[in-house]
Length: 117
Image 1 (cartoon, helix red, strand yellow):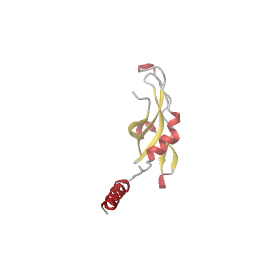
Image 2 (cartoon, one colour):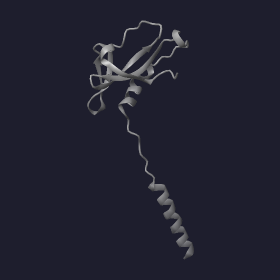
Image 3 (cartoon, helix red, strand yellow):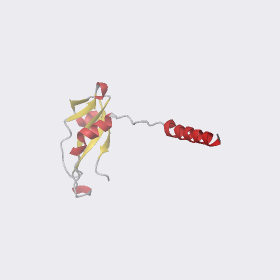
Image 4 (cartoon, rainbow, N blue to C red):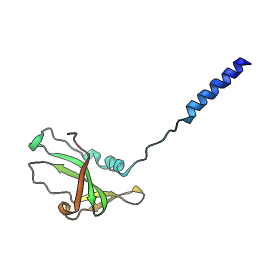
């Protein structure tokens, strides 16, 4: 009888440990979707400092929404700002939009996926 009690106790302990842990899945965010869609376009030059020319995925605030866009980082270049970007619409569907006057309408620009420096 004692062996039976020990076996039941061992099984109950194992079941409690095995099934009590929650296996939460992390929700896929809009940013995750943008990295999946645009991340392959990130391009990092070998040169650094003023001679570098990197294409990075960035985000910023545009007319009250978060917009994602490819941005050229080149300190010594005179590049044209992005003309289009992407936002997460209803149900997190990705929508392409035209950026109107980038320099005056985009704020809080941060790099989402870049070159690591």
